[in-house]
Image (cartoon, rainbow, N blue to C red; front, side, top):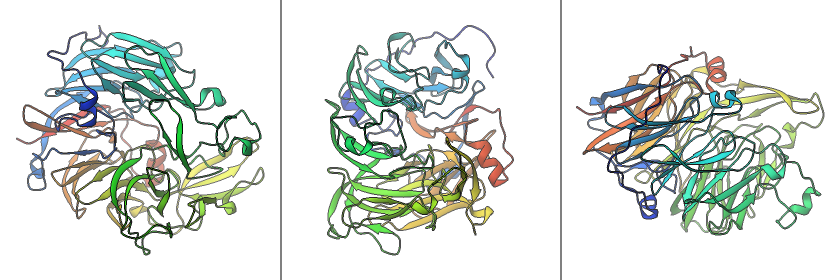
Length: 516
């Protein structure tokens, strides 16, 4: 833990501004966005560490972090790590040794907001770092000194997601909960913070589907555009198309995760894929958007027009999925009415619950596969007049020693390979590299590397605490580093109770690994 004292106020030397072209085509050495690139592959072209030598990885340096919640993904530019630390701080850290260069510590009216900070990531552009602070502000920090350049207030609801920069605009979204006025995606000018456009996540009078909600002004699980993929024009914020994955979500099974963008052929295997579009010719090539929601269902759409292509349950099919059917021609989803709360006191078990939660997936172009962590975990819920009494339970018939793992899913066929199957769930991000490796960690402190093609475990290191989101790779001076953050997050206590893992708490730290 840090000793009490003055904040570091150094300067990043020889800083090179990040251009729009660099965000589109980053240096292999950098990690400039939460998933590294706009397509959300979480794939690094670095291959100094590979299948042949990964067993020689060792700890390069470790840096302790303050107490609190940590669910963040760092950025790395020219060997400088920019990260959110527990307590809602932002730090610039030397990527070769863990020394803090500068630290920005925000003062909150409610100090508890800072201690439970959950912002997932930062953004970088030109000479600024963009921070979606938990008090509803977007803050632009000087990347060299950490000093505030501008800040703009959006809403008094929290910012739990990070921002991205597109065409000179900082795009971010707040946490809904106070009606339509607090539920939006906003684009601010990256240089000044001035609002450029705002897209409301709940349909308004001029939006498609508004009439079906009968003028309701409060947010509800059935509102457009809840649990939707939306395609927006980044210049204007205007809606191009939308697809609703889960209408009338009765169980808080979010579908707000990153969409992985790729191009491949449509050839779903009926043995693997439960639903697929019968109107799409097999073998046709599509620009796709793929995602796995908390409901445990993976969707693949045509990203040009929102056309449904295919979907399958992850990790296995279950009779009490949130969705009972997807139309093979239109892609329209039908909610599973058998598990809907129809009156106070109704009791149902729905699968899945946080089957895949906020920890990101990865895509490897060499295997044409998406890698996702999964938890064979269901929701036991009793409805009340306002919400529900809810807790996680194992799926009926499942084996507690096999409730968690990694699923490798071919994005052309839907064929699934499961590996690292065990009792310890993971809340860490997946990382794929050109070295043919997949990195992942679990709440039992195990950080591992796997063969991306076969799933065979190639390396393991036992750390001081559970791996929490975070995993990235970068290079400085020709040396590749693998970096991961351990620490406390909101999901770990629940998963610990269900899986029987003895959770280690209070060990927030950055670990980096490299070859000799």
